Length: 175
Figure 1 (tube, one colour):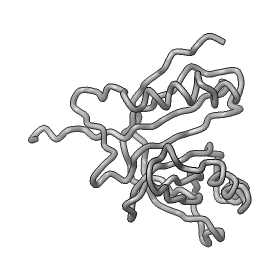
Figure 2: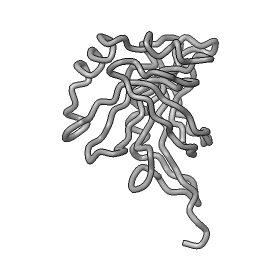
Figure 3: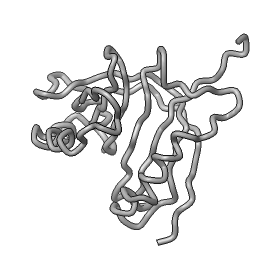
Figure 4: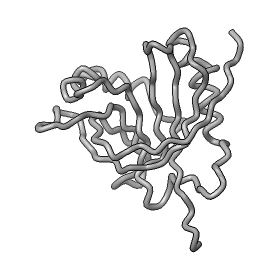
């Protein structure tokens, strides 16, 4: 397989309600036990517990944040419409409107390609060094509600691809 080109584009995502399972990462993200984290997620019901709260299908996402914690939170879930009673073991959070740089690739033929080194792999490395547009800053510290978002786009009519969303903020002209 030829290595697909990386695509970068800017979006503004409105505020949304997110339902999933929060996992606190103590120490370095590189040392996190993702096998255990994902096994726990699926053992308690995974996305099956989220889908009843979706009016329209929203793909799986992971939101990295530090809201109310000194440690990084790895929040697996999806955008939902509303929830009256949060399923046991899950959390629901409202995330604010934000602008993002989306780092992704061309659409790929298989889910395996999207999750492999030419999809998730190269995009995950590129998000660390992506050039932030003039007039913006990377907005993943301080009062930002976001550190990073990962989004799966699998089994769509276009194909498969993995996305990393880097939060950005317009620089105040007065600064």
